[in-house]
Length: 368
Length: 139
Image (tube, rainbow over all chains, first blue to last red; front, side, top):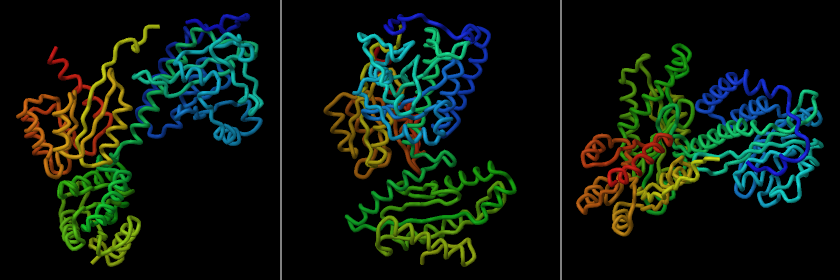
């Protein structure tokens, strides 16, 4: 790999380097495995990225690091780890300073160059980059933070389709004497391995954001329900067609969780969704609205017909042989055009009807 | 550095036929995120008749077909496709009550059926297998 900056000046490498690449090799494999497990099992992206950056710093001896994510024509500071500036400003203040700061991709910077080219950049001294190098250091961030950047190792977050999703930038390798030194060229592959993990995590999170599936019940999630609800309400108004909404809340669900544990509660939620879906028309949408609350959206259905459907579902749930004992549910029904208004009004009406059903003793359908 | 980038990535043409605009939008976005040896060029159709017209006009490597649509159902479109000799691989997207018809669709030669709401990670695998299936059999 030809990196002009890396060839200039006397290179000093951290003393622990040899150990990192031999004795600690097994530890690194172990840590990478653990990261892999975290990526595939943890829902939230931010803590996973924090962990990746922490491990990447550990294995490269970097004092600080930034993980940028590409968003349109900018790089966003997704993770900033720098204990030196944290001590000076506090972590929160630091994040605030950088959050507003976005790195435009058309302004010369090391990270910007890496994001655009997909190349690895390894420079021993950021302020000493030869003028004929294809990249330049953007010292504005140093100006904002008061931190002095010396050595930089920046690698792209490439996904399997070779798209650059962002940049992992490791800053100031610390040598045996506590002074910044250059990043050893062999650390480039180490950094790339961590960046590849970050790319997988980012892609999984983006797929997750797109998903219409409720991970707990395998039914539709609230996001899909709301999208469909807005579409169906405007369609109903446009074509003067009826539309109904049923809100369903399990009675005494908390006691199942308390008595049998959350796994049992999750099983029950899943069964309820399957029951509702199997008893619904093809164009109905059954979704978990939150907690143990469900919504059935019934297009082209009058409130009167929805009340009949809700009553049927109430009886089915009451008789269903749930593994953890009998269970009942309360229902609230609202329907256009009987209950006129927008999406929010319709949900409010159904919610009010559900409240009435609960108040009148549960295992009932409200909204008559 | 030996990178996979040097291997030629063919563009696979995918037709999405679904009357649910939210589903179509998500499928388009997801296809853009899918990890693959090939990139996807996506066309969409809002119902069976539109889908059939698109299939008659252009060549596709894969059809994502909704089972339940007004006017012409996915199953009807599938039957019509095969009658006209269009052997494009089909992934059938099925809803609430469609598992029985999905079984009969399997009998009429779809690649697989995918129950809604789909798991995008699973769909990713199916799409890449199905899109590659014809080129394999043609080779």
